Length: 213
Image 1 (cartoon, rainbow, N blue to C red):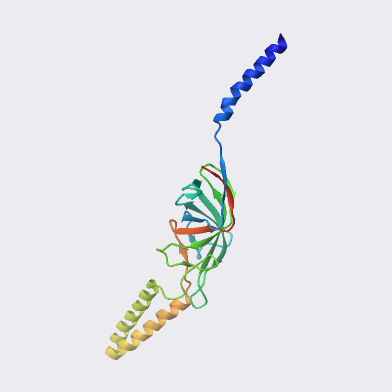
Image 2: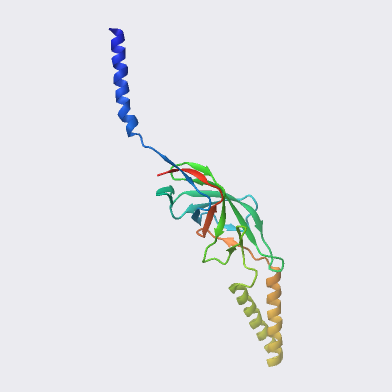
């Protein structure tokens, strides 16, 4: 009798467990291919003036990424990385550069994945451009702010020359003022700054296996 009761209890427990297992949600694993783009917005401000090699950064996924009909990277996910290269240069020597290295992708579910990706596009509203190595660079030529500095130097030189020697002095003073302004532009550092909110696009370099929704 005791054995019969034990068998009945075991059968009852097994039958009760079947509906629970059938109702358990299933997860689909998707292999997201290399070359998949991810649109981001920087959460961490970055600058060649203050940042150094190894400094970390974070960026938020702006638009959900879908693959084969599945949402694989929800918007709001966080990409974390570090600065692999920082160059703060004067225009006379070269361009200031930032090289961002993505490391981890954290989903809203709490899952975290190691990733390999590179920056392929900068913010259209920003002067910095991305080269074919994934580096963000300031343009080598004069920017609008630099032109304004030269114009201000030219005007200041003209006024000073006019006060000293009339019209001829104004022309000479303008030339001197412009030369000084250009000289200052060549020797001062041109800092590359990416404020929080800057838009970037990275592209996966290797496939990544994610749990899809």
